[in-house]
Length: 240
Ligand code: 5RP
Image (spheres, helix red, strand yellow):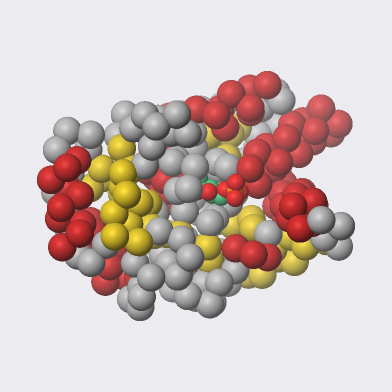
């Protein structure tokens, strides 16, 4: 099996396994990205095959479009008191179940929905599991479009190697919320909690792609099946 096909099969197993956790009547956070899209499709199959009734809270415009296509009724994040179960992908996850997210640019809404969830499930293929965050992947930081050049200078002062995210066509990438993303390289990222606090203290930073204490169940898909790990990740107080 090719590496890409193996990863796709692994993602599908993780997605299917997590979709099996959804129960009738739940309010479910629907993550973003390719693995989350497979999970949304699987939930659509459950709606069609079993008549499963639940409500989805999408974390991006693209997830909302897909969910509607497959017949999942939706509510906005502000129209629900909380979310019973949130299922989302990740770009990296470390041994303390701390994550980097946001390669797809949906980090602000993803974190808002994760923060109101009673149980958070992360679905990944094995290459997302890393020994240390940030060695390969920058930390996406969503910032105000107005003043983003000044924000970028402040991020550099925190030690970041910065890149303003652009579309493949070279235009500035604008998030669903109308903001921009500065990808911040920190290859020697030793203390994600301190870094998160430092980044959030910069005026103009709306959210970071560091998701700390936001994984209650990790589902690792593999070519042969999926493994669910109930974590003891330290709860993060940033959602209070
Ligand atoms: C989007 C995200 C995604 O969850 C993350 O990028 C993983 O995506 P994929 O499943 O396509 O690898 O954070 O903002």
